[in-house]
Image 1 (cartoon, rainbow, N blue to C red):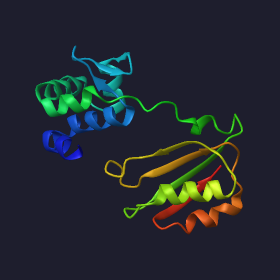
Image 2 (image 1 turned 180 degrees about the vertical axis):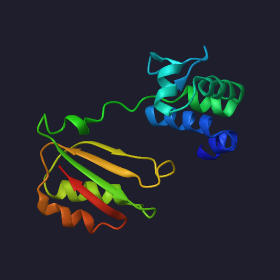
Image 3 (image 1 turned 90 degrees about the vertical axis):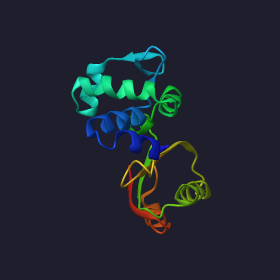
Image 4 (image 1 turned 135 degrees about the vertical axis):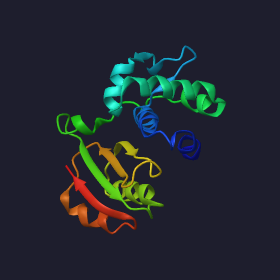
Length: 167
């Protein structure tokens, strides 16, 4: 997938930022040529502000997407991932673990969830940034209760883990 996007937009940094922002936010392009988040239409101005580009870059990016069957198939099927509980976890008495991983990150999610479950903690949500799109991806795990700081060193022993934050 990423190769297709890079191939089409590598000569146009503003368009590349638009495509990346659309994927990051779960925005799709519908048959009408408009950008949507689920069923909510997103204005060109809002997307331009989020991607830090001129509004003309939005229009030209959408045009390229609609003219290319592979890109259109990709972008018409993107859906938003849903609510990430990270920012409200403390308010509703949940735990948050953020794990920064390196390029050798195979098995980090499995080892992390295994460690959490072995300690009798329920996982409410897990979100991993795409390692193809992020230079330093973050795995965020939301738990039913705050995590004991004693587990910090155990997370750091997992192969591929660079940094851990618990709050």
